[in-house]
Length: 174
Picture 1 (cartoon, helix red, strand yellow):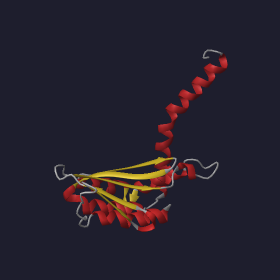
Picture 2 (cartoon, helix red, strand yellow):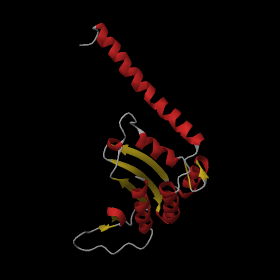
Picture 3 (tube, helix red, strand yellow):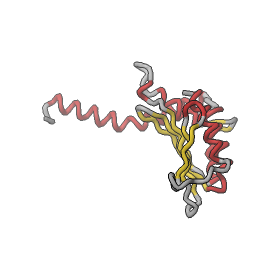
Picture 4 (tube, helix red, strand yellow):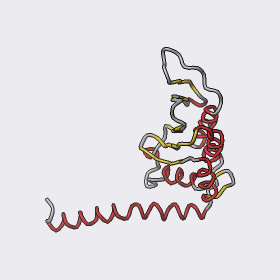
């Protein structure tokens, strides 16, 4: 996964360069191949001063090893919590200064880093995004925080499922 994201980081940086002109066949959208089988799609709208960037790999939670489910999501969340020599707090402050957001999501067939930034700050955002992809810090303290955060997210769902299972066993639910 890391190798693919490294290739996509190069593609993401290409977005900051001058995009090719659109043609009549593809009004508003430009699609071109990138490294390692990646695809760069640029769709511009000059009336909105925001850039929406998505970097996706073709590997998601379905690729997690057996009995280690959640590893892909954990690694992606962990990478987002510090990169390029910046702590989580410094990375968040840098994104805020650019008027940007950066989120991570994992689906069975893909892992995505998705963000928005003011168009005038695109180059700075792409530099931070590249750091997250190519140079994550992976600090032990952030791993512990990520695990605690994720377990707090799961507790209500697990509690609800457990309560439902108990009620089913008692015959209260049919």
